[in-house]
Image 1 (tube, rainbow, N blue to C red):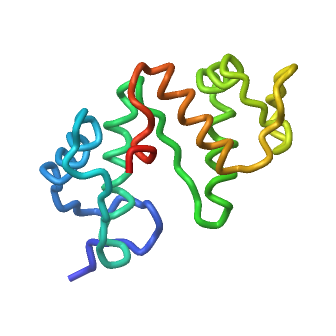
Image 2: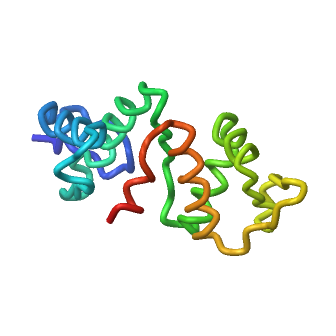
Length: 146
């Protein structure tokens, strides 16, 4: 019998184990105002569908306009990559400009006249997430409540 799984990254296998309940659990937890869990660990052997599963979860969440979904690669600096990706999206970039977040030191093209450039990538990301949370009328991002 041929192995139904594939070792190719993100390729949908010929057979998929239904994970409807697990996906619903993650989506419901992430969208709940007072979640019991804030972090999930998805594990499995290589080629078993972890990436396919998380792609399905991210596609479900991205249907809601309040969610910003970004795929990051461990081959790049995660914080710098996230800041650059958020800044490249039209709506978040407008929010950052309104909140006077100056990312010019990172070569990201967002310079606000009269505001100081942010010199630390962690501070930049924190300010960006706070600005997005404020715009969405929600509490501070989850990580500020830990």
